[in-house]
Image (tube, rainbow, N blue to C red):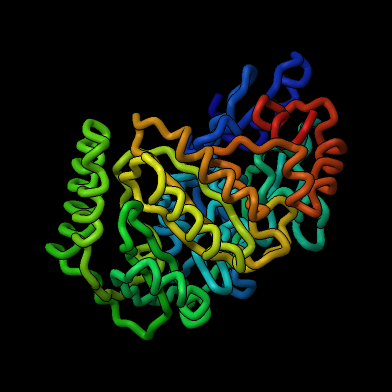
Length: 413
């Protein structure tokens, strides 16, 4: 169902509980896991959308949970405001993105959930709970990234700031150099990330830093060539060829990884942080202690080099500072992420299994919305506050109204 108001949503939760049905909310279906699956009532919050309050003095904006991030970014820009950081796509709903831990890359800021200053949550008994550092702080600590286990988020209040400019510098760089200089790049740039192309020693780096402006976006021809022709159109064709002829992938990768050239451009944040992603894929991403990421990436490269795996998608590396969210992948530790992808329709299990073995050996924490095989026993080891979250869940949802098979695996009964 698609409730038209928070009141309708609360009534739907009460009615489902009375009927013995489970309830889940689903966003735009961007997750690779079954976090939102249910055999009961499926709530689509898309009618709950839009900015509901702007507090320029406090530097906050309150937005309904069904708002798509793209719409939020456009609306904020019209108000002369921006989130401090965001991920590289913006097709998800606010609640879906924050509840699964969507993040960008950043020396000082990354996770969208870490920018939340307050939220409202419909609990299993139909109450509307307001949470912040001052009000229900123990729920706030967990519900900013709750995987849908604690209730249904209806609104989120984000910290925002006056609109600013970012200058992006994209530059090809060799694998050995970028890994040797990784800590230096992270320290010197507000936002640093890179992509390594398997079967090659080639990477593409991206550094985003604040600037005075003015906006100097890529020209329309340059933008089309880089973002549509190369990053989507040609990349789609390359992956389709690789799926049909896997033996050709290493040769294709060597050519494709040299196709992108250096470029510099300046624009408002969401136009720099995000980009179109039209090629379909399956993804696994793990968050590692930042000091482990270079070693793990070198292990992954050695694995690919000595195996008969054929990988046509680049590996993405990003960073995040430590945060204080109970089940955030960056909770309590400086973090770096390694994301592995396979083109949709290509067998991915062998690659992901081998990669996951490397990541878990480094105490990795998988992204809650991406492919992984970990369970509650593993999470209890890698999240020091895991018991705090499950105890809160026992209190807020003892009958598991918001439960499903995925939550049973990752959180326990």
